[in-house]
Length: 77
Image (cartoon, rainbow, N blue to C red; front, side, top):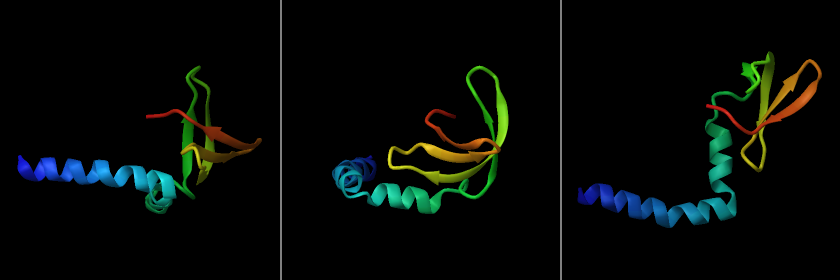
């Protein structure tokens, strides 16, 4: 139990710094398994299309390239 509490404390202390200096986002992008891959996007209305995951922007949205251009995806599961 003490180890878990220590881990949570360390995470809580490190998170604001990582968010402020951008290191979290850089690491998130580096570890992403989606970038460069073809993905199937399904909108809340049920529309679906294929796209290529190109980037994760500064707001953490997934940027995809479709036949009609680039789109930002801000929700998903």
